[in-house]
Length: 335
Image (spheres, rainbow, N blue to C red):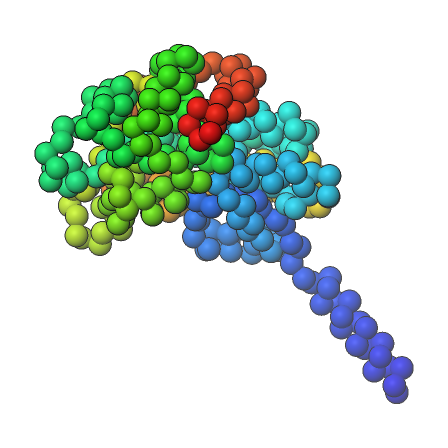
């Protein structure tokens, strides 16, 4: 009798294990904010359990994935690589050699599936400038003048993907020497450097109680301000400054990681990020544009201004000179 009880217990454990959902791990940056129901739908359709691993801002996430690549990996897939970081991920050997097929998209990303895109630019607090009766800067060079001292906060390009995107726009629009001359002047004029976009936007920006009325952010942010005000604002209290050398189109994507414990499930998860459920959720959850063609935008995106121009170095220069540029920026601005 006792043997039957033991066998029954062992069988129950075995059945439970067999029926348990398969775990798949997705590494993401801190700005990831998809609604739980979009992931729950994937889990139900694939008998899976998705574990979301937030790993800091975009560059911090990538650096951690690279550092842990020889430890069996901490994730099966990654979301949040962009057109400034995906080449580094590829050359570091952390991406699977074969990626799943992509849906038809309006933007593309090498070595990964494009999921969304947005525009990194300068963003300002309208009320602050109106109260101070200070004209808005018309060029990046204006920001080096005394009247704009201690007004700008930027996330660091060494640890933040929007910070890196802004630096790439600077170099693309002003040339390498012009960009670093400008940053040296900005250091003297009191630019503040935050670790990531969240710190710059939610802590340092005056609209959120900080001391800096200019911040490097995303062009869709005015739409977010109206959306989250719950009727308080009918027009955005903030605006974008699309200045020469200060606007970058950032494309984000997802990829299966090399050494994934669940490569087939990881591939399905990466493709799920291009599904209509996820693509429709992206605009009002993460305030970016969906990458998949013919995805409708919500009405509030009428406040999400799109620039007429963007600036960027060549693809080859981004891939080959980025490390050198970030090192030079660090010496110029922080040391």
